[in-house]
Image (cartoon, rainbow, N blue to C red; front, side):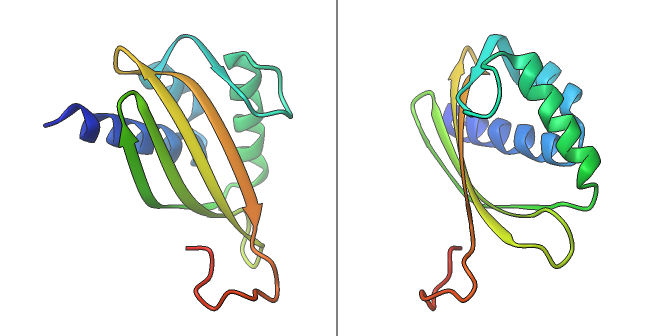
Length: 126
């Protein structure tokens, strides 16, 4: 198995685990020491993001999270996903970019965009 496939699988598993509320497990398995993130709504440390992810999972226990595609280049993996926080809720397009060091996630960026209603683009966001 190539390193690129392994990093993609790791990134996807990390995101799926956090989306379903298994945040501590995801970080224990995959986060590097000194993990940091760039979400502007939370402090940059791992503990702050973990707390926010747990709160989000508790608030939206039936969230749908579907990976659409993943692209890897060197130590970077980009994952494009579709999320719906609650039944009948707005679809979100989310892109996570994860940077790896020694096979573990050292850094993460995330960008989310709600699907507009109506949507002008007939091909949609996915």
